[in-house]
Amino acid sequence: MKIIGIDPGLRNMGWGVIAVDGPRLRHLANGIVHSSGDDLGPRLAALYRGLCAVIAEHGPDTAAVEQTFVNKDAVGTLKLGQARGIALLAPAEAGLEIGEYAPNAVKKTVVGVGHAAKEQIQHMVRFMLPGVTFAGPDAADALAVAICHAHHLQGRALCIKTSA
Image (tube, rainbow, N blue to C red; front, side, top):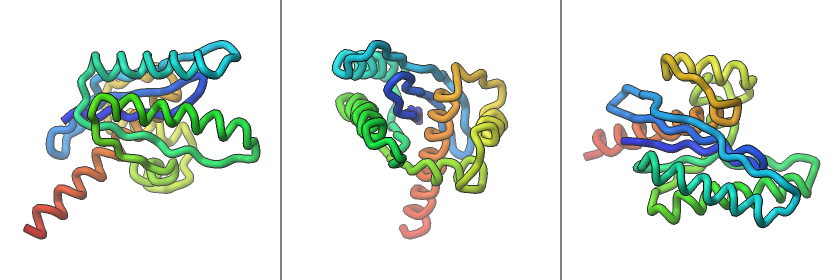
């Protein structure tokens, strides 16, 4: 199974694709879709087109998107929410099932604690996906989201097997 993890961002939207084979995880690709300029509409369109191209190229079976958190800057939070809408729309348009995870849930799954630093997350992603080279911090975060989704899917599969 291939999973695409997406870290929503208005300037930099990170993505990472992993393969899951039983308990084994393997890195396939990662990158960042960039947008520039000041006009929101064209920036969102660029993110959408870029993310759709990534999905078409890598053919994931499912997707996972990190939820946004509310900060003190209401305008910034709203704009990030719009970028998150693109992160949900692109895989939905491709017919993918989408898992959504809070940042603390991703950190707890990957590192073991919900308030881990970015460096700790990157270290554990490197440990879980040997040989990976990150396109940037946003791509590393996206891979962590994909790993989180893989672990949740594996847990769900175990629950189904034991209840049957």
